[in-house]
Amino acid sequence: MSATWGRRLEAYTLACPQEVLLVTATIEGDRDEIAVFKGFSSSLVRSTAFDPDVPVLPESAEILSIDRVASPYVPANPHYIERGLSLSQMEARLQAVGV
Image 1 (tube, one colour):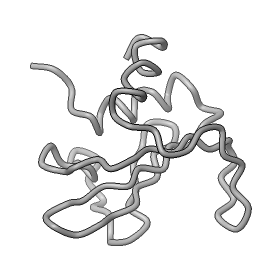
Image 2 (image 1 turned 90 degrees about the horizontal axis):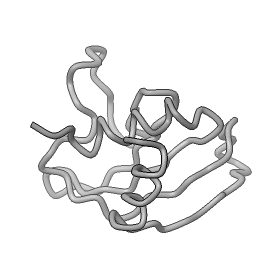
Image 3 (image 1 turned 90 degrees about the vertical axis):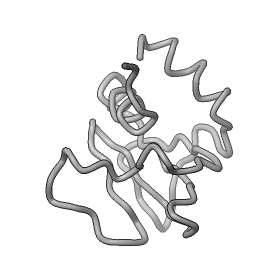
Image 4 (image 1 turned 60 degrees about the vertical axis):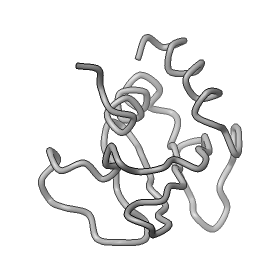
C-alpha cells in the first residue's frame, strides 16, 4: 500500500527541514489550510488531534494547492519559495528527494 499524500508531504519536510508546506485543501466540503513542518501537520483553521496517527490531511481530502515557504514560517511576512503548486508539480519535488 502506498503512502497517503499527507504522509508523503510530512516525509518531504523531514528531508527538507528548511521548508514549510502550506497546503490548501477541501476536507468534507470545508476549506482548510494545513501547515506541514519537520514531519508534522497542523490545521491552521480547525483543531488538530493530539494523536499523530490521526491524519490531518485525510485520504478523502482534495488538495487544491501547495505553497513552499522558507523556515522559519512567519505568518505576517512569509518568504515564499514557490506558490500554488499542483499535485503533479509537487510530485516532481517529492520524487527528487525520494519520497
